[in-house]
Length: 414
Ligand SMILES: NC(=O)c1ccc[n+]([C@@H]2O[C@H](COP(=O)([O-])OP(=O)(O)OC[C@H]3O[C@@H](n4cnc5c(N)ncnc54)[C@H](O)[C@@H]3O)[C@@H](O)[C@H]2O)c1
Image (tube, rainbow, N blue to C red; front, side, top):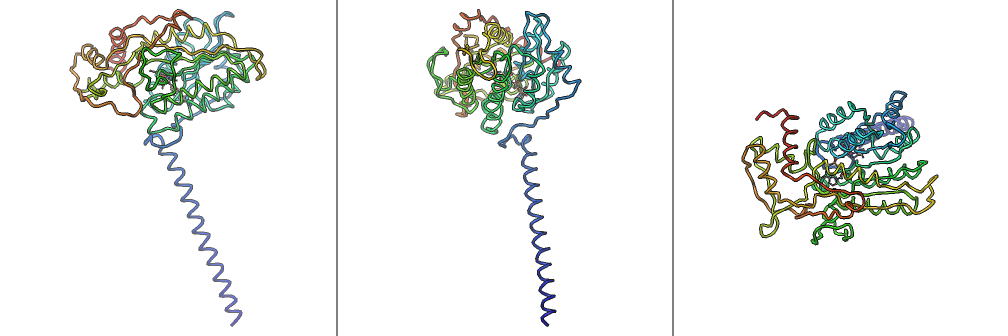
């Protein structure tokens, strides 16, 4: 009896063990499956809290050779520049301009899908034709940065990679922390450790002026009222820049761009998607402030921004650190790069209607309080004084060039 009972008891324990192992195994599989699914869904929903999908491909003899050839300046008096965000709107234009004048340029971009990556690939193709190699990788990849700085003695880093866009910050806040804060620190760390240290020029934003009402915006104005997480990450970047300059002697120049537009632009920006929607006969939403106040922007044409980037780079002093230690005070600057003539968004629509020869269907709605501000206007006297910055393209002329590019790129027949 006992034996049987004993045997039965053993049998009971074994089946209990099998039962619980199965449950445990299934639970484990469920957790793994769930976590895989949630990371998969990032790209499509955009509502997750991790970085956008990217693929990193780097390393190997051919890769190293491509980097070194691309970084090689035309002569000893030219620079070797690492441009982050080189497949982006501003980065691709700046890379092309640096290369044209004889500087060696290596690009770095993660080609994420915040907007149509095929546009980034098309920019990459054009740059490749002019001899600029873009490394596919993330600015947070410190191993990649270390390898890069071992391979090339960069004189400058033009850091333009970032998560841009004001409204998207409500959908995917962590992508802003990943690229604009952690990524910036990663770039500063690599530059700090390099010997000699490069001078750094990086893109902040006019959005740091946030809810300020005193216009035009001057670099001396307070910037502690950010209206979006995007603005807050750029403001944080400016403070982080201060510490790396102060502790490690890095020469750092921050550029506050004001609504940049032009050929090869960003599809998430109003002038771009207005053009697309007007051509399709789709209604566009035009925002207005309280009491029907017009929304206006200091729209700045890409060629003027490129001139500002190159002017800042050429007037940047060398970093003073060595072996990760500061040996003397280093330059720390912040410049507004705007056009100094704000234009109402309704006027922008009128210009587009004229250029596209199509009347826009407009929905006028109150400006939502999700990050956009009513008005931007740059005071550019500091950049003018330091390196002769002087924008020359008005909105009509700049949009004409944009529309020409748009119709050609998307093969729109009028
Ligand atoms: N365009 C504007 O009106 C404007 C205004 C103010 C500031 N800015 C700033 O200027 C810079 C350039 O803007 P843009 O309009 O060319 O934007 P963009 O999105 O076209 O370019 C940014 C590029 O950075 C890359 N990138 C993002 N995160 C990265 C990461 N972690 N690692 C590697 N690459 C990464 C993206 O793939 C993209 O190609 C950004 O710093 C932006 O915040 C732009």
